[in-house]
Image (cartoon, rainbow, N blue to C red; front, side, top):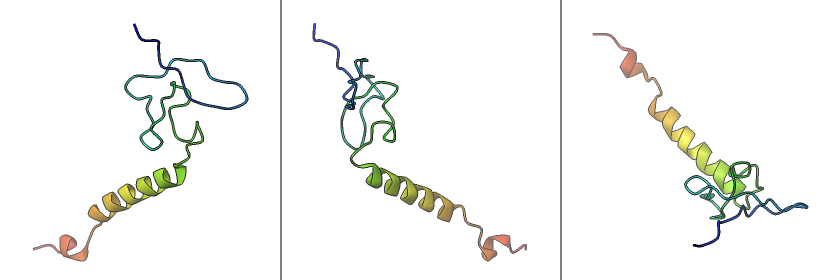
Length: 76
C-alpha cells in the first residue's frame, strides 16, 4: 500500500497532515495540501496573482451578462 500523500505546505514548521484527495490539489500550482492549507491564500500560492485575475474575469463576465439594458426595460 502506498504511503499517504502529505501536505506540501512549507514554512518554519512543516505541516504533517494528510493531503485531501479530491479538493486538496491547488488548481494553480498543482501541489497537494491538507484542509487547512488548500486555499491559495493559505499556502502562499506562487500563482496567486493569476488566480485573482481569473476570478476577476469570471465575475466581470457574469456581471456583464446580468446587466440591465434600456431595451429590456421598455414595456410594450
